[in-house]
Amino acid sequence: MPAAVHSLVPDSPAPLPAVGVACRGIAKEFGSGETRTRVLHGIDVDIGCGALTLLVGPSGCGKTTLISIIAGLLDPTAGDVTLFGTPQSQLRGNRRVDFRARNVGFVFQQYNLLPSLTAAENVAVPLLVARQPRKRAIEQAAGVLDAVGLGSRLKAFPNQLSGGQQQRVAIARALVHEPRLLVCDEPTAALDSHSGQTVMELLKSVAVHPDRTVIVVTHDSRVLQFGDRLLEMADGRIVLDTIPQSIPDHTPSPRPKS
Amino acid sequence: MNWVAWKMLNGDTAKYLGAVFGVAFGVLLITQQASIFVGLMSRTANPLRDVREASVWVTDRHQQNADEIEPIADGAVHRIRGVEGMDWAVRLYKGVARARRPDGIFRQVILLGVDDHSFVGAPRTILMGDLADLRRPSAVFIDKAGHESLWPGEPLQLGREIEMNERRAVIVGICETSAPFQSFPVVVATYSQATQFIARERKQLSFVVGAPVAGVTPAEACRRIKAATGFEALTYDQFVWQTINYYIANTGIPVNFGITIVLGFIVGAAIAGQTFYLFTLENLRHFGALKAMGVNNRRLIGMVLLQAAIIGAVGYSLGVGMAVAFFEISGRALPDLRGINIPWQVAIGTAGVVVAIITFASLMSLRRVLLLEPAVVFRG
Image (cartoon, rainbow over the protein chains, first blue to last red):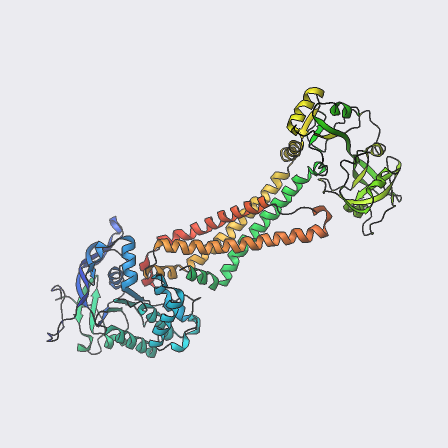
């Protein structure tokens, strides 16, 4: 763990999990000249496999920018991200896109399901991106939907599903191609308490995979209990790195780095 | 991903239909107006087309088209026959006369006088009567549309009488002719009879038509006729295009139709382009999600182009279908539009216009999709 980050993680006798995501000196600036804004300030963090990492912090602190860079959707101004041993700076153009298609799954706040596709068809999209035949992709998608408890809603369209069900479809879609990194942006923000719990339980069960890294960006303090690790950001820096259970009823807030 | 593109398009029924009907409306306007224009221009040469036997047309040397005629002397036919390389040559009269019914109702008619012996230039489609009856005194044929124009709502009937140049003419046959440019009835008589139905002039012969012997091309025969007689001699094709080009150059018809065709293009492009662009805008977050999931720009371009191509193909089919239906229905109901159909050149040209419309529409949309940052998916 980078020394620059204040850590509340107690020493543990258990072996350290493999590192899935390694960020080194990540900085990001937007704009130029007088309008240039520095959003991330040299972030160093390792995120291990087999655990659910929560990324919290107030609006504008740089969470979205950080996960966009981690997921390969944005290039950092400085620094590099290594995903499962592959430095992203070495991947350009379509190689980066292909790497992302194989290794990264996304869960969005607004689900982003295609309204004209059924649940099974939506889940099959990443397989179609990987050029699998449609019939086989939909069959495989049906199996994943069954695993997330929606085996009976395969042919339902998104507008026929509740918010929680739609988010579970989105999670199934993010998992169907068995990515090693799952990036979830506010997955419970649009859900009621019960649905949020269901979704987080699902993500928690997904995260135990020893070769998978799950990062969840959230504002929702109700879901902190599901995290194995909590990274709190403020003003473009990670200001807290802890185990959520170690601070009951933790409500994320900016903390000064010691 | 093509299947996903199709489902995305099909899922937004309102915009899909809006864009399709934008293209279809543009195609309908363009196809219909262009076809009517081509049909009208083609009609200017229909008097020539109805004389299929003749490959050589001889006229006054200042003749500019097949309608405005400076007669030549009757004896010209003998001079033409004497030109080396001509197989045959006959007289043909074409002019405008006034046909009056017994009750006084009259119409201008196109009067054709065909060779008394060979009937070269006589109508080929006879609906009632016998062509041989043209040789009877005062006998004329009238085209079906002309009969319906002179006696609207009445059944076709032989034996009716009309008066031309104070001479009685008896309808002994009803025929079909190619629709003339001026929507006048067409009355056919023998040459000698036709010249009785018009005011007497010193020269009355409109055309000498003929064909060369085997081994002599029409163009060569025309060259020889010009050299030997000083008359204008044109091959069939030359005369057809001279007439069509005259109307294109000397009337406002091309401009009027051209304006409507351009409007069809603008309206089609505006409706289809705007609707397709809105469709893309509303789906930007989905395109962003697809980008995040690993769909590269090349595949996204393919998806957008496929969607545009589907809109273009369906819109084109609908538009051309509506135009075909228009001509089918109007051709039966409106005699003035008979014989006007969609030339294959217009169909292909319109397809080219549709390609331009959907290219325009997809370029606007592609720009947004290509410039889209995949990270937009995290911005709610």
